[in-house]
Image (cartoon, rainbow, N blue to C red; front, side):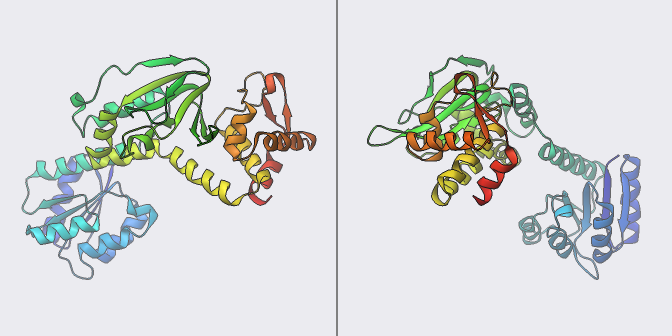
Length: 356
């Protein structure tokens, strides 16, 4: 049963509205003014708040401003219940972060429809989608409530790529966002001297190509090559654009899904700029392990070419080999069949990555 906090200073309106909500099978707590409402919001942690604007002690704007400062209450859907329908008042509330307005007097269905709509949207924002093909499709189905799914492409199929096959190339027209269902992919840029600078190594559940789709030149800013046979799902640029700009709610969720890689890129650049080669090596090994590219069983892990690992840590191949040899001699890693790496002492690697 969903919990509703109703903040209304008019006793008749408060009791009538509470009856409507309870008959609709909501668990209702009421507050007679803003100050009491703030206190009960923190205690009750409702699923949604219905709040009058013009109240003694603390008005609705003040309630919203206070609750928006606390992590537990900041994300609660907030609907203003007010007799003031002038545009300036409505705009002020929306600018403060209100989700909706219901103007008094209201029809019963108007209030219930507004509540149901906001609760559904909030459930969508909170919902976790699996980082696999089924999860991506489930997200698109849920998103159909907020954008015109008919305008999105259908029948997104998984395509198989073999080792060393390119998914997209630097400088070529950017046309798709890619989701890795299985396998391992490296992305890299080519320097003026023809050398590869590895920008990332990605595995199952990762998206690639998103920065290229935002590139004003409309070209891929790097090349993506398969390291280990992969299954990839392509999402057309037109769909990417609709998901990003078509609806604020969908956009927030979509950005959440694809942004982890961008955060990794930012952290990687910071590491490249300020960390020692030893730190960068430890950090890279741990990241590859977290992605499932390096595994505890050498027979299951991915064999990463030393030149690719060197590019990942921003060092010469000889330097990368020397660092891996040092780590092996220190008992931190083992290099097994087909040069696959196994981490033997993750705790010490973490200490090296963080403190050298």
